[in-house]
Amino acid sequence: MEELLAVGKIVNTHGLKGEVKVISLSDDEERFKKLKDVYIDGKKEKIIGCKLQPGRVVLKIEGVETIEDAQKLKTKLIEVSRENAIKLPKGTHFVVDLIGCTVYDEDKNDLGKIFDVLFTGSNDVYWVKGKEELLIPVLKEIVLDINIETKSIVIKNVEKWQ
Image 1: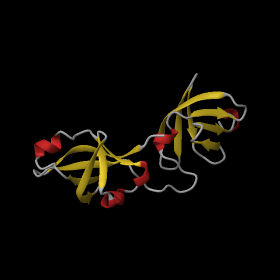
Image 2: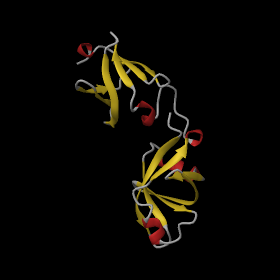
Image 3: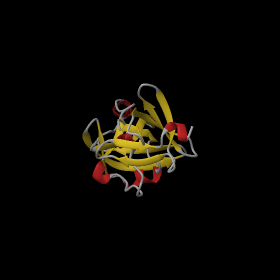
């Protein structure tokens, strides 16, 4: 399992004093207000300020004092350690833990690996790449078992739900 989890991506600078605009990769932008330490390129950085704006977060990172300093961080991911990540409700998983899981049907046929998770609003969809590509709706009646430890997911046979 990945030890660092991406919670945001720096997309631009903000102002002249080294603040950065961040697009949240988390479901809860409020979580940024509680962050004290983050990782950028694997290096621990201290957050000394946070402002929430519609659709983005503005962070002040210790040691980033100018627009030129901030520009060097553009496109970098903001990561947190797994121990500082939000606690997920039972039965939910971090996307990073799902990517690469092998998907099997009830008959133990290997359908491929999860390439990405798509967020549609009504339910998530696993994008599986194998002999053929599949889009699997993440619904309790279709996804029967998820085992992150063994990186395996069991779904109902495709012909039963398509």
